[in-house]
Length: 476
Image (cartoon, helix red, strand yellow):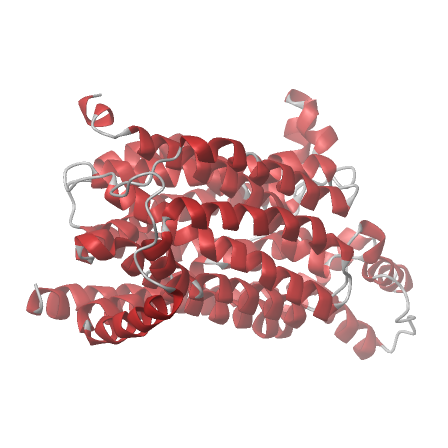
């Protein structure tokens, strides 16, 4: 309890702001992959997996690249001003996004939304870094990460109630993030007085920005760390890019549906797209639920570990858990695998920000936190490739159904929605849709993507181990 009392009011205000921002973001983002690729008769846009990978990979990648600029701007012009701009962009983008159904329209509007998130991210993490000390950083970032996951859990839980209208999903997120405009007056930037004037002109800011960029590039220890962590984020992002699609396409959720139908009918009535089926996003959202329950405990267990040691162990457990989520069609197995993934995430992910916070000079916290998103940028770009081209070629149920129909010489109209197409293929081969799903699983082995994912994760683990043993100690 003494540790909690050491945090200033701004720490708690920042965590509350983070809670609502993550609520709004994950409220749509966890559903976004299936919204982009889902059947049109279920409210989806029927984009290909490759198109989905481009939108989510490049768009989200840009989100995590821009903090390199926005972090420096926030240091110069004040965190509070930047937060106000970020929330304004957020609200307008959430309102605009469902108005477009073409690839170009959705892609450009999503990039605009990403710009709002890019303004927000380095500011809030720098606030946490500035309001914690060496003694409180581990618990502080653990609390912060728990708040992230409270929001990440509540978002899909709420928006899935409105999945009957895809527009409402985005409007709910607009309202939730808009609540931060009411909280913002209570935020006081650490280290700067209220109303203090900007310290530099626009030109001076960007000249300083490029000078700072050159100094960051010279920090070999920092740059190598960022490149290694990019491998972790490539694997991690499959939780949002690929796993919801995989669960919707391949995993039998009937056991989970039957449990809730018997003991918690509210869940089976509101989180089920069809009898005997639970929403894929409800299943993948268990990661956030596990973190809410266990994050503070895990942070307490690893608080005495060096950040690099905690990250190495966490990345390894994460990689194993993520690979296992793609191995089975049994939803209970999937949920256990997500729990394993979550344990690794809880141990390793908060330590990334803590480690960078320790590396950063006191007067350049937001700048370094801005650059901390570079590996997330790279990870999103690569994750888009894995969840797009790679998933489409190895595991996409729609693509596999097309191949199956062609190999069997079936005559099925391509004008049908994807769900109607699959049902017609099943009818022509005298199988129920569930039986056809099982046949395709056994014949085409879509679970093989797990090998790629664990390979990416293990590459990051081995690289980080070498970094700790050689590079980190050499430059310590």
